Image (cartoon, rainbow, N blue to C red; front, side, top):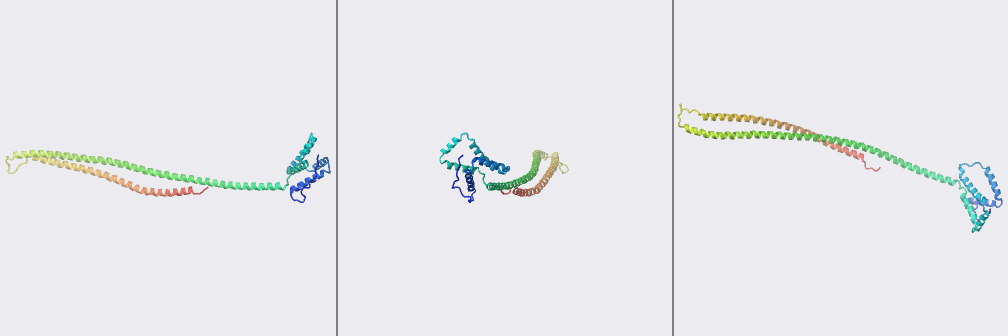
Length: 328
């Protein structure tokens, strides 16, 4: 096994750099290897290893470093062609320096790093992770609070929407009742119009009948007047009895017809008065019903308007409370 002399470029032990101290210890080991054979060193290392206590999980990195060096020693000792390996090492340019730098690099890489640096790094990582977790938990708590607030607001909006729906349904029912009453009034007015039309037709028929009867009487009077004129002309030659003139049969018939006309006119006038009274009673009843209905509607409409305004204000208040202008 080739031995290496310590290089003068190694930093002194007084330098506080841990890498420089590590290189110094490696150089001291190389100087000691020039005095003691490698087999003796291996024996000393074996005794030292047997004297050490069992390593715990805290010394895993040191154990890995020791196993790494032992693997390198085994690969050298179990090399089936050591001569060829030495020739290859000799043929390398600046082999001593390369070998020394390789050993130093291997020792630097395989040697366990200082204990404080990993602890500090772990502490910093733990602190950073803890801070990140704390920040994340705070954000999640804030998000949960906002979600709960949103859930409460949605529940309030749902209840207020149901209240608004109930108010509008009640208003629609009131409007339906009002429309039904108005439809009933329209039906009654139509029936009144039909009755008025029937009464008007009856009165018109009575008047037309009276007119026809009067026309018939007038025509009969014309005929009777002609007959009476002829009879009077023939009876002028007759003498008066006792200085007085007796009534002829034509005059008696004329008086009877006048009595019939007067009696018929009286009966017709009584019937007409009865029809007029009935018509007036029906008109008064319709007018009374219409006035009562209008009075009821006049009392109902302001109440509905006040309720509508109150419901509108309530709805506006509900909507303003249910949908505030805020960003969740």
